[in-house]
Image (cartoon, rainbow over the protein chains, first blue to last red):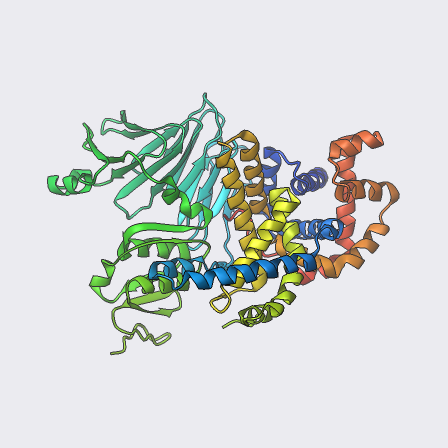
Length: 391
Length: 197
């Protein structure tokens, strides 16, 4: 018993030493992928580790400012700043008034940090035996996002309210992960082990590529957008045979309809009627709609903390806002749901999105904690007393 | 709405009121930007741009957090945009893709660098004292790594020791610094947002 304890202590000291070196390599930009992997795991083990890393990083940065801070002269820079500011001011006045559209964009440009502490839950099995059936799960809760580097070097960004899981033996024989929600994948190249993202309905098989998959439970569609490389969409038939649905080229987006079997012919043709789309209906009674050319920036804006939407109804936009900001949106009037908006926002808070939208189409809104009530009449919400609308 | 004095200063329509927040954050922002851009000139340009943007929004400036957080986030985003732009202009040339990846990893691991850069000024004296009290060899290696910007392998070569020893000594130095600066560091516990994009 005692013997075990000693062994354990020595091991943990060695680990500590190794981690110190890894931290130094990370801070000095000499880290390799394995270092980053190990650091992530170590940080996930204990809050104390997080604090230790933060403090080391602080000292590191403090030294940076002592050693290179002298290179910068803030007084000189401010003189230059004043000159540019004055010139720009005159130009602005000559240009005259701003259009409403400009206003919306300007408001949107007021970048504000989402300060809520986001977190990532990294559940790892700490049992000593290597158990190949144990599963790693990475979760990005509502209102926050996560980024992970998988054991094979693949980089994954997870959108709010999403999760991935993979078996502990990931990358040994194959690279299979399961996705619920939205993820952006930069797959590390490995011809021998295809990278497969499974959703509840279809699978996306990739080699070394970059793509985005959106598959939220409760939504009728699975959207896959390819940015670079090649991916194959596949599905199991009723007889458990793999059926290839189609192959995507860069800047193409495919939308898979989960309930195609129950959709009527006219509903299907409605979905597929928009230009640039081709319906594929095959033996497994599947409906997929291919967009030949999409702006992939739109699909991956979320990854860069941006919110882009084009001619999107308030109803569908509200789902995005709910996930992103961890709020619940209630529409008090049906017609508002059909308002359509286009917009581009950088790092921003929910109040500013709503204020910008109000510029485009007038509506009223009120908050009660994490609930937002939207109406065409002024909204008054009494805190803690349920929703109440003033006349 | 805001209690940040700097924001109140900026919202005044007068350039000299802007000087105080400008000089307060300028150096820290430049050092921060250079971690991403690797070039001093571009770092300064990015910071200038961010300040001009803030200035042009004066009156409309509606920041719910602190000005500091706003500035650091803007600098970071602009640096990443700049690196993305470089990567596209150079047709995904590996060098620029690598630069962008490095920057994204930096962003990934250290969301709160701004905080520590700004307290550095207050800690200058204590840090210097702590460095002075390090064992000779340890201090020498540490200064070479941190102040002369030498790679671990370069230090190893010039001192005739192994790269492993260099990393070990640097980690001892940092550990001792952390120990002696403990009470100052507690003043600014970094909020952890690692792994969050």
